[in-house]
Image (tube, rainbow, N blue to C red; front, top):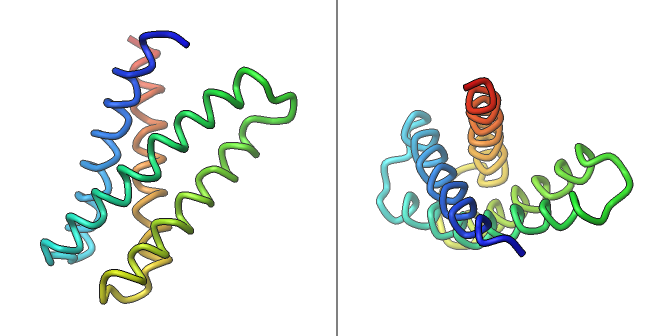
Length: 117
């Protein structure tokens, strides 16, 4: 495995935590405990999703967009479960969906911009 994987994992995780925290703040979540839990939930899910996607790029023969959607759905479900179990946030799965879609689409835009440079 390439040594470039570690910096890439770190950048992906850092951006995800920042973007999802921004999303939570935008929608009005102010409780420090909930914001910290969101960061911890991303520490659990983000590296797994990124690594599994990279492995999929190497070995899978079916469309990667479908695989990526499945991985994102698993992250959304896992984070929603964490929020529902350890916070009193309303609609934890919808919150997880919104935060993940916000960070996903921002990440896609960043990648498009980066490739254009």
